[in-house]
Image 1: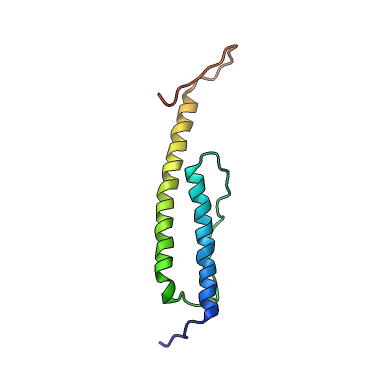
Image 2: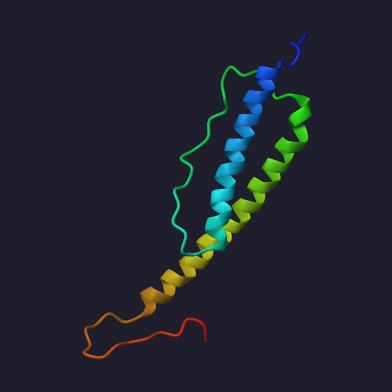
Length: 108
């Protein structure tokens, strides 16, 4: 099976795809580091159509992006689990009206 040689346009298209993925991951990394950051999750990803096969020259960069995705998945799972623990604590607080304030020490 013969393959067409990689063109500059194909390489540039794939570089743009990798840059977009890296930008999405940078936003997610900021979210995992700062609990105050609001963000929008990427809505999904569709493989680019009609740009040809990824050039071999971008293999290392693509593998690095994949490794970053795996690390982010781990970090987001930890963040989700932490949030679930906090919600369980909040749910454990009795709900009744009181004229005094009620504080819960979640650190101690």
